[in-house]
Length: 187
Image (cartoon, rainbow, N blue to C red; front, side, top):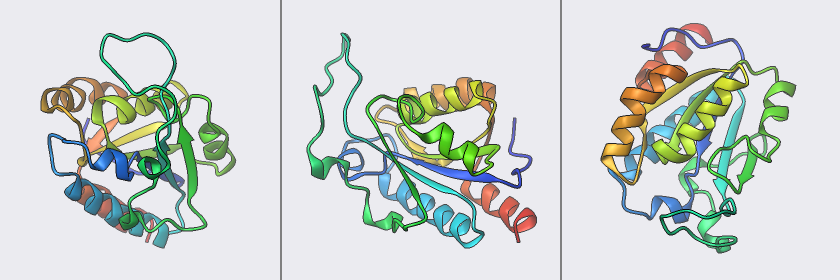
């Protein structure tokens, strides 16, 4: 479903735009994802809308066929990229799983702020973003996915999430679509 509206209390949730993640090879340039995310951050902050910055500092335990880092990541890996211009009013969530809701205070924070919709951007489309979107949908949040402000390590995984999964979890649009709706509804 194309992007139709933003609720009065919509939060921007930025997934894993941190030094260790943006340094990885991706399907689309992370510099473009960071730039578009920073533009949205400015727009949300200027309207007094909630901003959540998420980083990942470890992985869930358990066996997997594909290799993944064990334990916690080095400190420099988790540092958010400076282009995000982290503000004291931003809520920081550090996760140790793919999704930003599991074993974090994200849901409680959003509920306390009266948030009914989240806008998701970041890396990786099929991992952190999709996992967070799935959980948000299950919790009853309206979900918007900004498809030109996200990327994945694999083009086919990105394409699958954007074309097959996201339309079932919420609405998709571009950075400009979100900016246009913000200008109309949150002037």
